[in-house]
Length: 300
Image (cartoon, rainbow, N blue to C red; front, side, top):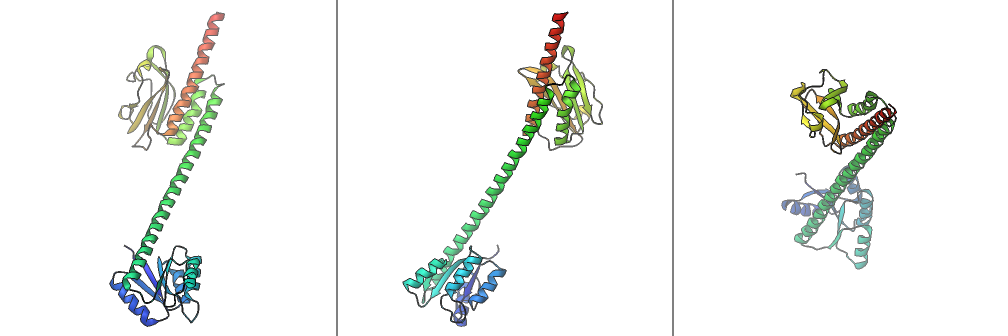
């Protein structure tokens, strides 16, 4: 585990050395600075969760100045002030400048260690909160991206459905939907079946290296209600035969074949939406065909 460093700032070398040795003997990782200026240079190169600083350092900037500058440069650092000249006014000023805690000399080592432990625990909690916030933001952004993508899918497929309303030829009806499906999943083989007479099937469009015909092994149209794994039967490593049904009626069937194992899943939201839209297009087309045939029959 990477140690959480404590920076000790004091202009008295004897105090720094003795305090550092005492803290290190109790398991803390400590570095020293003999002035506020030196400490500022050190925090430019490394983050210190905790800084212990003397308040009065005659040469250069004071501990109060250091606290203010540290908070401006690295707000996550917690500053503990130690001084031999504590007054209420000074204590309040130190806290106003951003000090985490305040100890008056002389103090017991156990008192300082208790303050350091609280500060390090707070620092660890702050890191956990930041990590959680970062993860939450990433998840929210990913979800927003998914929703935007799905919205684009809805609009794209809705446009295809609207364009299908005036189509009078089967291949022209299904081709745009199949092109959209290919662009999304890149199948190696693709076949669209429509019901033929007496429960048979007609191939209205096919692509891929494996020639397909209306196989007698396919279930009759009226009985085809569940998705079939259709890999080996079709010569593909991974394949699906999907019924396209509306209100208990089979309007068509789709085969997707992949030469090897694919990442395609039937529960994909785009594929489910695609099925809904092409079913609506096929239903509308077949209703129009039936209506046209009825009108012809009446005229005859």
